[in-house]
Amino acid sequence: MAWSKLKQHLESFLCPALYGRVEYRATGYRYLPDKAGLCYIAVDKKNVFNMNDVTTLIRWYQTELDIKNDSDIQIPINNEEIEAVRKDTKGIVPEDRLKVIARNRKISEYAKELLSAQTSLSKSNFVVVATKFLSISIEESIESNDILLNILALVDRRVGKKRILNMTEKMKLKHPIVQYFYELRLSTL
Image (tube, rainbow, N blue to C red; front, top):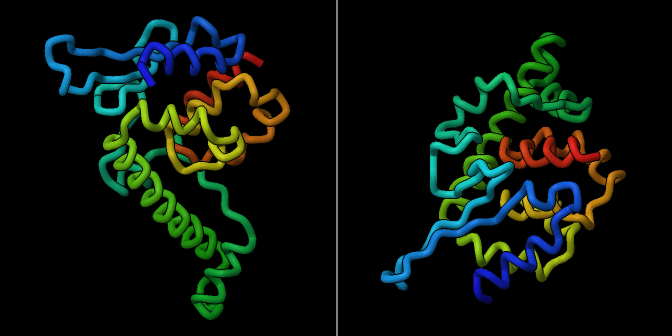
């Protein structure tokens, strides 16, 4: 599918409040047809999301330690996770320490998922993922671990107010760029 047609399809699915604010842009090279252009998403005329650029407004993590030390990331833990730690440690660890261990385990798991998602994103082709988005259900896009599919689903008009409001807990575990677009969508409600 040609870029102009793909862009037209993607923009037709934008939520009405974000139409004109969120733009899909691409650069192309007329005299270098074999060189792929860059695709990026702009919000209010600012390039917010460029897959290959580390200078975007959204923080790209390099190490697990960066993720662990980021105070903006809030990882909720539940009683089952605390019980799993209690079982693993055979009950010899103090109660307050169980929460710390459970949280650290969950952060490590989250960090690995986040870094693998970033790695696959920087290698992915915007056009391929956008075409996939147009061919699968909105539920699959929301539940996916692919950052770009999550973003495209969040700005989609098929995702209603009630569903957006019910995603709050789930969004805490997503990449900061996905959280940014979630907050952007929340601001339109």
